[in-house]
Image (tube, rainbow, N blue to C red; front, top):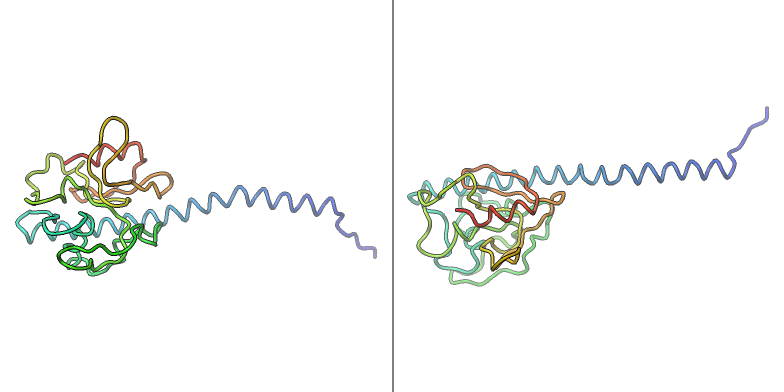
Length: 199
């Protein structure tokens, strides 16, 4: 019985079809993986929110503050650490390097966590005297923490030039944010700027 082999043209057609399918499916798989990382990041922020809530319960509704230290984000981590006891919570799975180089020096010594890929709101976690929950005008829109580097503060002027921070749109062109009422939300970058100034 005579066997028929594949011709070169047929093999090239099969290879071309596989390449086209791969080009279509790889971005889909990549976005699905990023969706999983987004959910893990939201879980981290939710736990940070619970730690903030426990801290305010213990300190007469006062938020963590930068009354003695360096950058507001590292000081917030230092004060929240007893309620979390896990530095990995402060590292976004989409930015495992932490996004911050080195460990800052401040009067209390080195920060216990060497990596940090979340920023904290300067409007709430700023300098002395510490802010209280009663001072919040709208807890639903008051920004506590989110995907970013350094800290979130205020606009320098018209446009989107901001002092002291950068939002990282690391989750499918958006970022996760934790608000003072405890909810966590993913938002596109163009919507996120507004919430960083609220209190």
